Image 1 (spheres, rainbow, N blue to C red):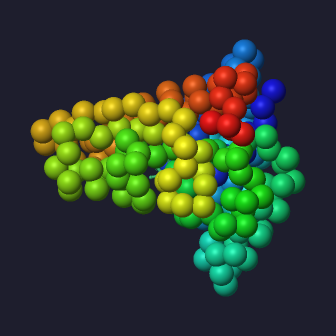
Image 2: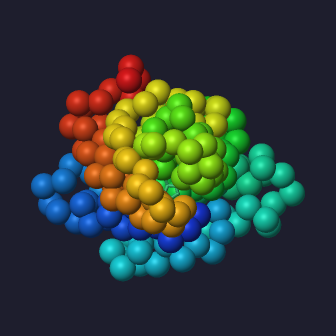
Length: 194
Ligand code: GAR
């Protein structure tokens, strides 16, 4: 059984989908803890599934590094086999990446390396692209630069807004994330040699 810790910032709809998948006894991973960089509404999903949660509010620390030290301490306590960034809208400090890599993955609402960063959906619309996508990548010290583990195209429809497009991307992200975590758990994806 693969023990997964999930980090979020927002509503956590993708987290909820992973919690639902993991509640199936045949799924080879379980969520042991959910953390957030703020008082995120998505932490409530953890409670719904009887999973522990914690918040390490970024704004309560003097530096990104100090925040990262506390975050790493919380994660360490759970001894996760994998950390999933599921809408964590904060760059992890290098020391945190160094401690847990290569066992950190991130979901992103674009077809990387297209449209990296915090506004992947908005940037694809602003660029006038005909299509965008969803990606699950391994986290390195860059911004969305790690090895791509899974990705899929999503067409941009006429009249799409950031909200409508993001709403069509998220179900694709969920499917990819649940499948990537499963493949890591059963050894189909080797994070040491992706
Ligand atoms: C997801 O689309 C995720 O890919 C994105 O935030 C959303 C979180 O949604 N992450 C990023 O943009 C990271 N750069 P959720 O809170 O409803 O799961």
